[in-house]
Image 1 (cartoon, rainbow, N blue to C red):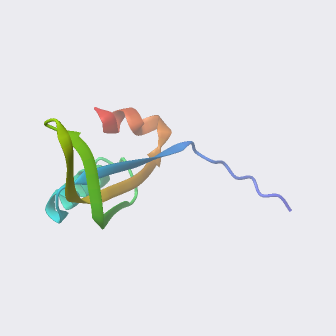
Image 2: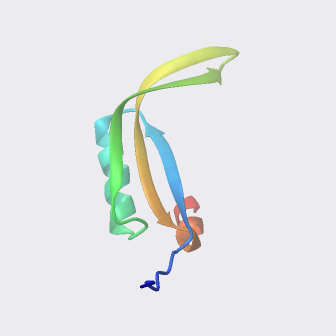
Length: 77
């Protein structure tokens, strides 16, 4: 028997933050604004980037959530 399932186009958003407190603040805002049902804060991320003429690296945390593609513009504003 086939079930009628409807999939909603979605995107996964990855953001890095410098510490747990910043991650919790961002996650709280995302949930409060109903941009996602769940947000993950993942420690142990190292970000490598170009800054002031040289390669830099910092310990970060990754904040990840999945959201309906239709509301992605609200997140980016």
